[in-house]
Image (cartoon, rainbow, N blue to C red; front, top):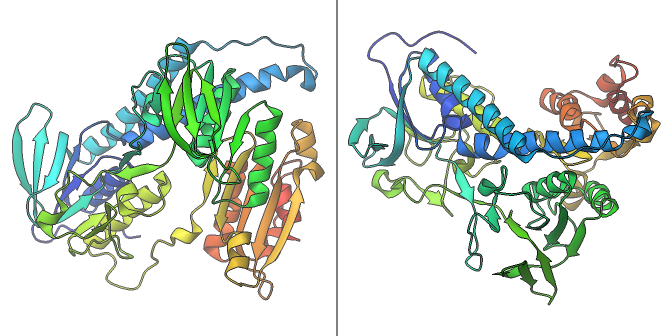
Amino acid sequence: MSSRRADEGPKKRFVIIGGGPGGTACATHAARLGADVTLIERDIVGGAAHLLDCIPSKAMIATGSAMSAMRAASEMGLATVDVKLDFEALRHRIKHIEGRLEDSVTSLLESQRVRLIEGTGRLVGSHEVEATHADGTIETIEGDIIVLAAGSRPRVPEWAQVDGQRVLTTRHAYPPPQLPEHLIVIGSGVTGVEFVHMFNSFGSDVTLIVSRQQVLPDKDPEVAAVLEQSFLDRGVRLFMGARAESIEVGDQAVKVSCNDGRIAEGSHVLLAIGSIPNSDNLNLEAAGVESEWGYVSIDHNCRSSVSHIYAAGDLSGKLPLSSVASTQGRKIAEHAMGLHASPHRHIDYDKAASAIFTDPEIADVGVAEADAFAEGRKIRVTKVPFSVSAKALINNDSRGFVKIVSDPATGVVMGGSIVGRHAAELISVLALAVSAGLTVQDLVESLFVHPALAEVLGEAAE
């Protein structure tokens, strides 16, 4: 990628609505390339979904994992340790991390001379954005390039009355007002299972309502089975094949009624049933921007139906991952500044790695085994359990496996799944292999550290 600045002629004016990973990456990249950039953010620079959802959840999970490790100290040849959660200390830790990250992003933007506006933005024309500042003042900003990166918010069904105290969305739970004695989680996707793991680690009783016949319905069934067994071993109650229909808040308990007649009773309820895009107040029609189900329709360059208006992050309807949003932001800056006039590599969303921070961790990338079989594609699948790894035995945790999907004719790595300790780190090796078109033989001939969990990657490639 060229780092040249576009100094010839007037500077291109970027107006970016939304300061999450997509918006901030676009802002800093465009500024480095010589653009005049204005960034409008209403909540927190760095992104509410990122700094108020993703980062706090991982911080809480890290605390829970530390508690679990200390409880299992005797299995590592140590005296048993009695641990207790300091809820206020955890709250302070999360706020500290959020503050550090927001300050870091803000400092980077300021160093690039990006103009920051605390407030909201909406389109009032094809090149005009109306910015409403936090103090209520309104100004109209003209832009040669407009980037929509307003993110998303938790979805709340009509039958759920969220109060932020007993009935929570994810935004209320990092951390919640009090530690739940018994948490009912509605939704068994990525966010839902992470909350199950998190609060179970803290010592809460947990019930998970699963609308399908497996947790993580979009993941490999073998992967889901490992997590389900882990939850059952830890005492989590699973309501399989049950769809929540109503929530009743009483003086002593909260009850969730399901479509099959079952009722889950606990102290708190958490809704983890997806998100909706923050497009309703953007006034997309004023600029003729097309959307579908609230998501801005984009092409391979992240352009909307209006050539100088782009979209990034959750609002684009692509994978709701911070890594994807950041990549989109950089690509938008480069394309809008004219660096992509010649053929170049577009974002391949099918090759994005993702991870679920449960215990054990889950990560995958590229082609999934079940999807390949459903499409009739010829694949080679190899799987090796971590129980063969010396490092797994040293860690006293041999759960899970590595699965690699490859092309039987060429050996090219097409995808893979990892379940086990540090899966989120180990998947990077397979992600690189998928993106670079490496073969299983390339992995076999790699000289991994010994003893290390990564050795299983080489064994699965054989």
